[in-house]
Length: 116
Image (cartoon, rainbow, N blue to C red; front, side, top):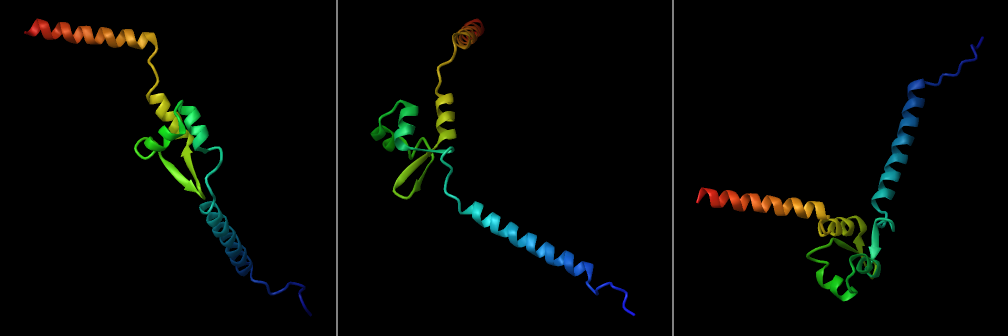
């Protein structure tokens, strides 16, 4: 008399499924590693120059020293985030910050004259 149960080892089933998951994960990771830069994260030279209020020629002259770039085919792409960070670092201070800086300068100057 047979019991109706097959002789499938549950650990073998788990092992096969785990191997399948590991294989899928390895495929996904290799695809992610081979992706080209996202259009949202990288901009072409014309857009980068427009964001910076520079000419494209000036951008090409400065891009090696100021901005990170990457080649994608024949195009040079620039990091949108880095352009925004560069612009933020070069932004003009609001008037309140300018006044504070002037006051700090005056205080330092006065304290130097008192000690002399």
